[in-house]
Structures are given as structure tokens and as C-alpha cells.
Amino acid sequence: MRRTRSPPWFDQVVALCAGAGFTPNIRHKVRHMLTIATLVAQNFGVALVPASVQVVQLPNLVSRPLARPGKPSELHGIWRSDEQSPAVLALLAALSASATAASAPRTRKPRARAAS
Image (tube, rainbow, N blue to C red; front, side, top):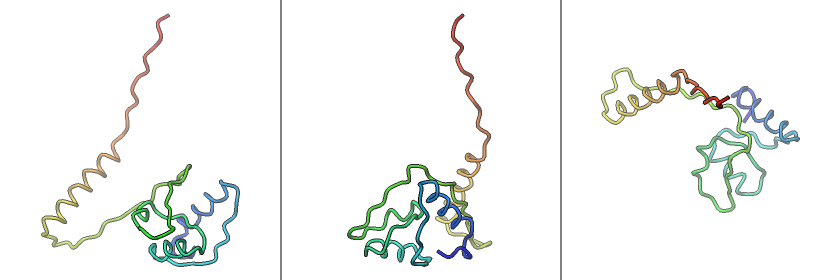
């Protein structure tokens, strides 16, 4: 991916590589994840991709999580303002509930004290 398309993603990938002790030699700049997976499967290199790409099944393609993952990516949903589809409305309700749960403040459980 070109840095101009997503500077935060590009910078995160470069930082992850630097943290692992190397500088990436970026030879191919493509933006479609299936194209990236195909290039890797055809021995054109390796890639850091979102976890969702692990469902791609190609000969010689292996997916592994990073030992030290980067920051989570921010996703946004879009839909029609007059949406009436029950499936879409159910998805929106589930996403809303998930976002509410994720943004709720986390409380710390008090530690049990050792008897003196």
C-alpha cells in the first residue's frame, strides 16, 4: 500500500518491522488484500495484513498472528438513512451494543490483602 492512501497504517507497518529489527524492502504497492495474498502465495514476498485476511485459502499461503500486534484499526459503518432490512437493522443493533460495551469504563477489582 502506498503511504498516501493510509499514512497511519503504513507507519504502523514500518514501525512493527523496525521493532522486529529490520526495515521493509517494499517492492509491490497494491491495495487489494486478495492481490496481496496472491503475491505472497506466488513467492513475491511477505506481508502484514489485517486479521480478516487469514480466511483466504491459497496454496503455499500461511497466516500467523504477530507476537506483538500493533494498534487496533478503527472501522466505520455506513448504511442508508432509510434502511429497513431486518438483517441490516439487527447488525446495526449488535454493533451498537458492542461499541457501548467496548467504551464502558473498566473497573479494577480490588486486590485481596495479605493478613498481617
